[in-house]
Image 1 (cartoon, rainbow, N blue to C red):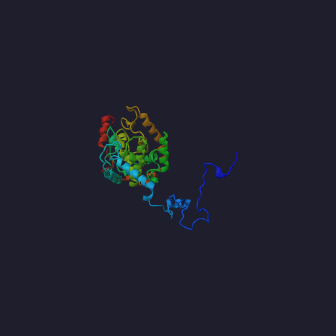
Image 2 (image 1 turned 45 degrees about the horizontal axis):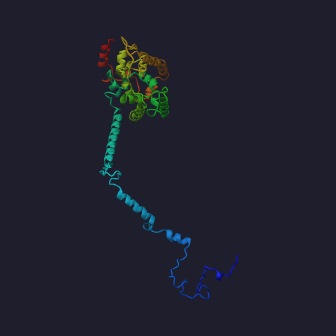
Amino acid sequence: MPHGSPDRWPGVRRRRTRGTTTADRPESGWSGYDDAVPSRPVPPLRSPWDDVADRYGVDGSGPAPEEQPGRRRRRRDREDRDERRPRGGRRDGYDRPDRPDRSPWRRQLAGRVGKVLAVGLVVQALVMVSLRWVDPPTTAFMAANPNGAIQQSVPVEHVSRNFLAAVIAHEDARLPYRSGAFTWGEMWARAQAHLSGEEDPSGSTIPQQVAKNLFLNQEMSSWRKAVEAGLSAELALAVDDRRMLELYVNYAQFGPSLYGVCAASWYYFDRPPQDLPVEQAVQLVGLLPSPGHVQRAPGGGLDFDVADGQGWLSRSHVINAQNRVPRHIERLGFRPVEDAGITGLAGDQPASDDDCSTRPQAVTELIAEEGTA
């Protein structure tokens, strides 16, 4: 294709600008555009650092919160939502009255519960301390017995040392030498055996049995055993070993309706507790694990031929005691009794009104009713 001079190309018009060279440009006051075109200011050149300064400020603190458009928009949206929301906070459009403040009521309830607990703890502590000197007129076990209860307290000094030594040997050999109601190792082993359904490896101590007899029942649940442990620990702090042994022998159960060694010795053997020989003392101690399946034999003694047919259970415990306890007494004598704080012999004590030297009237009436005199 032939090429001609550019001046001869059709449709192409060249525009000459004035003063675009250094020689033709005026010194000042010229905008660089034709006179017919209105002049506009040229924006200054910006660098990325200028954008950062506009956003965060020259010192990095940024503009005030009210100057930030994003925050203003969010605040306006939140205010609009609050205006549209029905009163009371419900979205169904229905009004409801404001809920009353329940904090004062809850504080009052908590205060009352705290006062009741505090009074209960004070009363419990007073009861425990009073057991140092006061013989309870009844116990939880006695009150729950449908057959009634026959019981008469006797000072432990007027109880045969044979019987006291047999009780310690059979029920709690560590009583005079242990600090507290039990040891934590024995308690942990008993708890594990109970939860796994195994046989109790050691049995309850005398303080635990006293707490159970006085305040609890015969339920075998874990809850009752836990309460028993707490009560026995508190009781061991309130009374000494001598008084603990005295409470035990006076409120332990020896028959379907017999409680205490005073009633038991007169009912079974027609003699006061201070005169019990080793053989009869061991028989009475053997009744402690299962006292509800025995009665007085005609003329005196133990008869296991009872109506419920469970006499073999009480008999087995008596035989077990007869096999173990006499050897223990023979080896240690009355030393555990003396270590528990009981000195001298029962026969050497001066007579008193409460020494159980005569048969209780309730025991006489029971023997006459049964016809076993």
